[in-house]
Every structure is written in structure tokens, then in C-alpha cells.
Image (cartoon, rainbow, N blue to C red; front, side, top):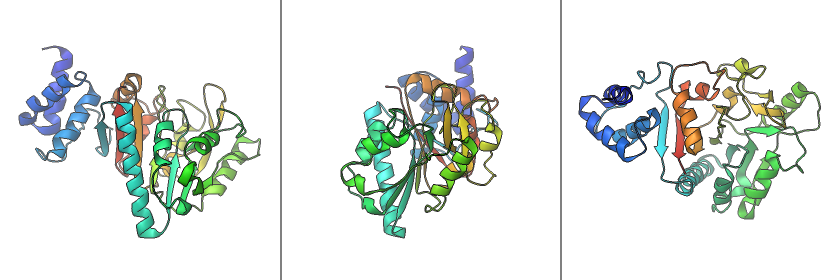
Length: 298
């Protein structure tokens, strides 16, 4: 048995005990090999079938959160259908229970299919508050603007009636810009009903990038919720981001991940290492609320 298969056997033993090894190993072989992410996906399927108790994944990464809920999908379209259904259900429940709902969404290209599905959902959008998890410090007319992305792909049709609160403002000073952004959304109903996040191939989420100035404080779950001035390694570098504390102030936390490259990032993040190198580790290690990771390789 190779070292990798031996490691997989040890992990599956820790997850569900000896009787679960053969079952999990078979699922992994039928998937894409014995990576840690595959093992955790197997854990989700195995526990959902009520074959064993809640798992202890501490042998995978002593610092990793047991709140990780990994769900695999055969392709991106199926993934987006599933996530859209979950979001629609959460917002609908919030509207029924509290009369209003709130959601924070990411930018980038990955969530576009999700936005287009949500825009078709028959919700009372006039009572839904929408904001961003992060923003690029560019005018809304720029193609890289997250606000523009949301307006063009989410706030369409019935969803055009949603109440949208952008982060970008006219201040040039990064700190003042971040403080002003928070003042624009701090009064929104919280906890958020849904926060949807994205992750980059460098392990960043929202606009919390590896080794950026102020990262340690931004990843501290115990500080006050806020927006922070962020700096990306590529243009446009100046960003505004919600900090981890504000992103965790939600009833439902979702992370759609598409592609083998990002799967490999997640597998690395599940192993021991500094969160300053892979900020997504801070999200995976928190234990405040479950993190649903929805993954498809294609």
C-alpha cells in the first residue's frame, strides 16, 4: 500500500471507525482519488446515511473545524442549482419568520450563474437586503466592479426590487473608505440570513489576501464586525472587505468552489499551516457556525 493510501486509511479510520473504511475507500476510488477533500466528502455522505456518529476529523488537521460541511456535485451547473435552492430556502424562511431578509454576496466570475438563478426565484425581493462581502476600489462603471456585477446579474427581473447597499464610496483614504463602507451597511438586519463567499487560487476569501497588511486583525473572529482596507496582489489592488467577524455574523455560510485547482487549495488548507499563507484556513478552522463547502471539479 502506498504512503498516500495508508494515510487515507488512517484518516477514514479516524472519521468513522474501522467498519467505515471499506465504504469510504470505495466512494473515494469511484470519485477522483484519495485526497483529503474526497475523504471529507465521503464523511458527509457516510454520516448523512446515519452509519456513524458525528466525525472527529482532528487527525486530518488538528486546527481544522469540525463544522466543515463538504458537499460534492458532479458539475458546476448542478452545484449552482443546489446552492441557489439553499439560498432561496433560507431567504424565504427569513421573510416568513421576520418579515425581511439579508444576504451578502461575493464578486468575481464564479457566482454569476448563481446570481442568474437567484434572480429567477419567486421571493418578495422588496423585503430582501443585499450587500457585498468585498469590493474593488473602482467606479461602478468599471468591468471589475463587484457592484456592477451584482446589478447586471442578480438585481434583474423580480430581484431588481431588492434593496442593494454597495460598499464603494468616494473617499480616497483607504481607512476612511472602509469605515464609511461599514457605516453604510452596519444597520442592516444581522445576523445576515446568508453569506456566500468565494475563494481564490491563492487561498484568499472576500478580499482577505495572503500576507496583506492588517490580515491578522481582519481574520480575528473576536474583534468587532467591520469593513477593512484590503490590498490585492493584482490590479485593482485597493479593496474593501468585510472582516471575518462580520462574515461569521450569519445564520448560513456558503462557499461554492469550482475546479480542481481550487480543490487542491482546499486540501492544502485542511492541513497544518499558517493562515497568513492561506487565509481560507481561518474560515475552515472557525467553530462558530457550520461552513457549507459546495465543490465541483468541472
